[in-house]
Image 1 (cartoon, rainbow, N blue to C red):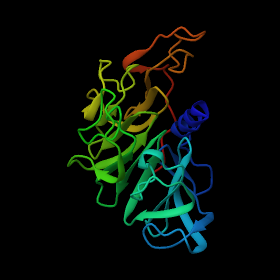
Image 2 (cartoon, rainbow, N blue to C red):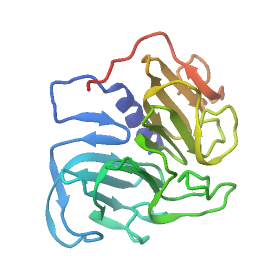
Image 3 (tube, rainbow, N blue to C red):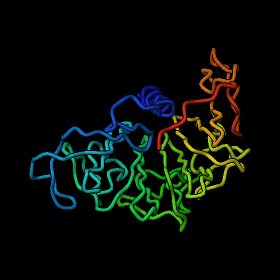
Length: 264
């Protein structure tokens, strides 16, 4: 399941060209779609079945979150560790409203992060490695959150939640990562977990996606970089594979091809 989760995320990294459908924009932290699914209601309400016009959707390991055309956030599925953000740990089998005024959401393995219309970053759910970024958790100490918890005072363009780590771009397109760093997936040159956002390099970035134990991103020159675990060659730099780990703990350039530039 984790392999499928990252495969979809990496597909989103490359899927930024115009496909002729103006209703579809693909990204790890958001999928814009004009299909109607689910139910509507007040915060925490799962009772009234109807149509929700979803414009963003993000699927994690066993939970899902989406934002409708009114910028309301809904989550559903498994709720261990509070990753739905409704203040409980109860599983929900229909979309449950979490709050208003949301711009984007990214469902990770056991945690979730989102950005509101004020470009503030929030995370919630599992936090044993500091993946929420609120200064708690790490070293195996669980500090889980079952409601959206504001992360720092910066303003953000995007966020992507991986297995137990998270990355995001601020309004200056600087890249930050935090959480589990066992395999160097944060890209800060160490293998130490971080429980607050840590700036990665000096490049400007226009896309990033966090996978299981590795991360890939595209800088403002449209160069592709990957870093972290590489036991299956998932970084794409010609190393790893056959269960031989050739991991990298800093962003490593992959090939010389220019990737497709996203439409405005």
